[in-house]
Length: 311
Image 1: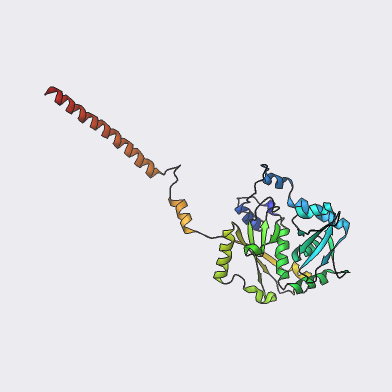
Image 2 (image 1 turned 30 degrees about the horizontal axis):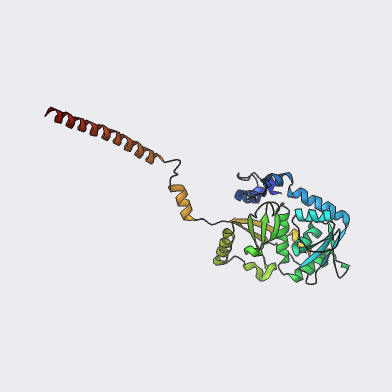
């Protein structure tokens, strides 16, 4: 279910809304336009779900074919200028420099090309001018990257919730998740994918060591992102075909640091704008004491002056 269904700042009423509620707690950091444009209002007027639906309709009607690279880690897709605009707005792929008039080429990552093929069903994929079936494409992508099944499951899980998902290698993570287009808002989550199950083999040891978790937590915190751990578990299924995707389950966990010093300062150190009751009582006592001190001093000085005038 899309994350827009959860109420920001309030606890979820059902289990389906738990992940959406956790993601909404951090809150987006919208970028500022040079002309003072409100990017939050712009994103609300053009939700990502509508942009992706428009892209899906346009690509499906054109029957486009993406070409898989020799290594099988990415693919190139040629589109017209209108479709290029939609791909940019939906944050799919990376535009390539080309001199062909009326056509734009995009480089799509492995998760992106399979999501457009399998998830949205709006393109076909070929290799060496031969159209690939869904199983053949799955085999190519898995042979190029052993971790493709869990990475694609995590990618499609976030994309289905209308999050924009990009590579997180520069932040020490697998992905980063944006609430809308990266030009409008900063990414909120550094995503680390952790597989669980005998089918994943030796890839199941991620973040089991405390030092690894601490490093990932500090790295995400240093770039103002919340660490989101997506645990992909399987119920004893083979990963040899795309049918396994229905059996893979994604669990979301957000991890944040508890800094004792900050909590102590926030709770025990009184605010200057709103002093506590003890400070107010102390201030009131000081004012009263000073008042009577002035009166007593004035009385003593008056008595001395009268005494000198008499003698």
